[in-house]
Length: 256
Image (cartoon, rainbow, N blue to C red; front, side, top):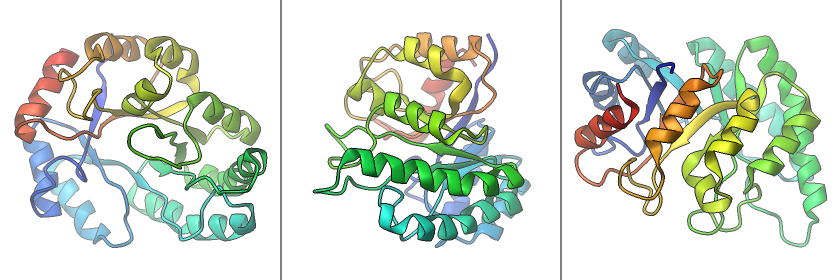
């Protein structure tokens, strides 16, 4: 079993402190990387300097645009605006950009919205390929946390990837969201691993750390470690106690 590369989401973990202090806390907890959501309102040079100073990597952040990927009327705008995120990731040596679709558009067919997602990613793919950055498309659950979001299933996510046809466009497989949406985690992860570029981790119910709910994370982590996967496994959960205790529990479950 290969050792998993974990990344701590500092939007949800250590989020009671200054962002630079969060990065230092990640290092003190023994983790090699961190990630976050939006980047445009952050001092990215200060974040990079702090990461380098404490010896951790930036695993990823989100593509930030005002346009929605799911809207065919704004595809060209989405692609143009998303270029800035790719450029920033390349500048800082960040390997992954998280892509969300936006909310489902009422009174528009899902086929049209699916095509818009494909076309937007096709438009941005050459930019990501040139930059050496992976775009990871994230399905979210619409039953508990993200009602109205367009992309819920990994099945449709993989269909999008097939249609885009770029080695730099992959799936973000969020284990929490997919346990709620479709289950059958290990089989789906095993079948899709060549097209998965990032994982997110939280337990069900409650979105707390592994070991608090129904997912057998020891088995899930073991299986990912057995597969040909070199990306990060992002820890994006709420802590039932202290962040330090939650992160220590993850290390124990993962056998680190």
